[in-house]
Amino acid sequence: MFSSNETQNSPGETSTLPKGEPTVSQTTVETTTTNNSNSATITTNPDNNGNNNGGGGKDRISIHFNHLKKLLEQMKSYLTVLKTPSENAVVKRRIFVYWGLGEEELRDAEAKSPEKIVDKILEEFQEKGLIEPVIKKRKQPQHVKSYRMDPLVRSAATLLPKEAKFFDYDGKGNVLPQRDWTSGLDSKGNPVVDENVSWPRSQRLCPESLSFLSLQGISRIKELPRSIGLLRSLLILDLKECHNLEILSEEIANLTNLRYLDVSDCYLLADMPKGLGVHSELRVLKGFVISNRQKIRRSGTLHDLKRLRNLRKLTINARSKDFPTRNDLSALQELGGVLRNLTIVWGPTEPNKAPKPEAKIVEETKSAGTVPIVEIETLPRQLKKLDLQCFPKSTATWLTPESLPNLEKLYVRGNLATLGESKWSQVKTLRLKYLNELKTTWIKLQQSFPKLEYLEKVKCPGIILCPCDEHGVWMKTI
Image (tube, rainbow, N blue to C red; front, side, top):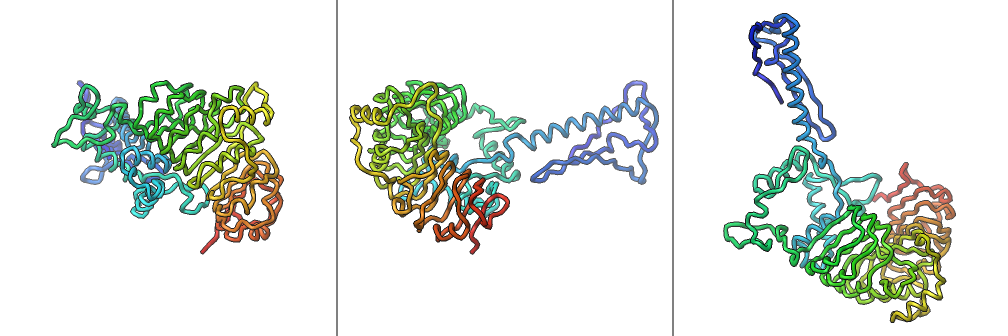
């Protein structure tokens, strides 16, 4: 609430206002804040006798409005601080995972995946009302991957670090640089040991100890510098949505401690560098590019990943409609028994480059020292989740319930025309989008997916009689 009691008269002016006109000292601006909006109410207070004080004259009215303008400016400034751009921001779960690993809080939790630990923490925060899930459609709790903080909780969360002199905000919600961050660092950027000062791990600014680097969404990046190889302690490299990124430096092979590498949505990235197979600690690899480059011997292939025995999640950007070939399926089989989540995104072929015949590509791959083709036409049987985006064909011999007996989540968008006649005995979650050729009924779907708990159907006109809501979602009720 804002009020002013500083009404002063200019020289030669009387202090009398017209009767019925409230004085500025009796004008109160009240602001009310809710979770969704801010409102302001301007009221006038009568004097002790219940009458509005007053005077007369055009100048008096001018004084009145000048002070009112000042109050409104104060209110505007207050609302700017109150509702900063970062308020009500949506935060992805993966950011919490990256942060936890970068702060060493989740590094020793290999028995459980860091994602599961973070999910448990977020669940506790939800129960206490500190955060709320962001749900655009009806979703099962385990499908929620984004969260928003209550404004009151956010105010407390920003106040406590400010009091601890960890960081501060300006009026627009931006983090201000703090002298305290560097006052205890030596000339090399390392924290000075002091028994009376507890330095957060995130303040270790020297490259040798940097564990989390995110350049997400920086469009001006075209190529990673060779100096990236100096960050030998790096655990997480997030390059998601660097739309102009064209080349990954070969020095990335020096990052032998890397656990998360995300180059998804980097549409100009033509291929992957050789040497990714040295990342024996890699758990998540998103955006691995498969292309028909003429200089394929210098490009990384799926066979290079065979030593990644800890890889749990893999996302492939395929620039060929023929993917996966038998050679590709063989390479995926070599990834070992840890891989659980596989996403394949088919995109356009490389611009101004004619795709080479598969036989030629296979011959070059053999000469590059990779494993020869074997007669295999299945994906890894241990997969729990398979996500096929922009699927270019109507059928696939490797997409059958028999070849994927442990699959629990199946997402398909594209041109697929059949899901086979056999039963997907373990699939609980099914998402089907933009499948114009697929024709079936709700009864047949239930027969094909006897354990189905969640169905999302978007623009699939051939799938009829499903009890979905306006968002195309059906969810089993207990």
